[in-house]
Length: 260
Ligand SMILES: Nc1ncnc2c1ncn2[C@@H]1O[C@H](COP(=O)(O)OP(=O)(O)OP(=O)(O)O)[C@@H](O)[C@H]1O
Image (cartoon, rainbow, N blue to C red; front, side, top):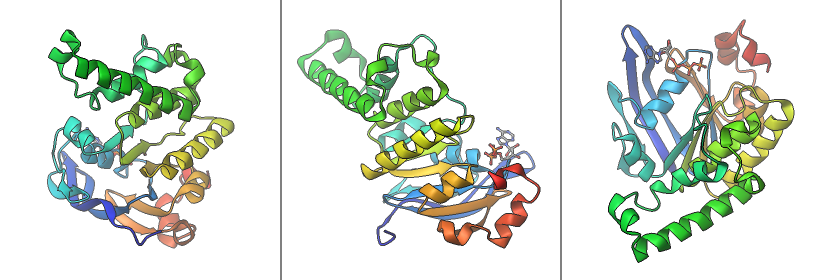
């Protein structure tokens, strides 16, 4: 599996907030088609790393490459156009939009998002709109939400809200999907079902970079794990190497999440 090329390369990346080195000279790469987990204690710099990759914030130093493209400090929409999509640690859904409408936002990139053709409803625009709607149907069927397409997204169960976010992310046709603690706050059943969904997404050829505290999830799903602490890479390898690694145990010592 690891014979494939890197889809994402993070090279000597640093970001400080005041005196806090949130990400400190961090280098790692994500192999195409892998499920790659980022783990580390609270405050280790995981969410900052995701914000750097997706262009929400710019690094002080270092480079981020997606295949052969330098995406460092590009605008988030440009990075999305390069094929990077994400879900957030705290689910972000608009309260007055249906499941279908929410997922459809993701096709904004796909349809070009230009205003004038939309107002004039040109033939080309209508064709793209039809294709986008078909694609959303496909995606909602895939994530198991088609029957709920007309319900308000924010009114669904927590697990299904996460599915809506994933559908919206998939609608941008990503090659790399970033999931920031996607099962936090989920019950066991929801967690298990979401894990199955991530495997299905990955089987479609989408590389997954996932932040998680749930070690069962990490060990079951991941091909590769990068452990970070104080913004630095502590150790990396497949689950069997990371599992019970002394440095990882030490970093987590006294913290509840290692027992998860
Ligand atoms: N916008 C910000 N301004 C100031 N400090 C920040 C900011 N964002 C993050 N930090 C600090 O940077 C460090 C890394 O935070 P980050 O949220 O990336 O960690 P994390 O590994 O995602 O933590 P958690 O597991 O708790 O979500 C922390 O010390 C945090 O307080």
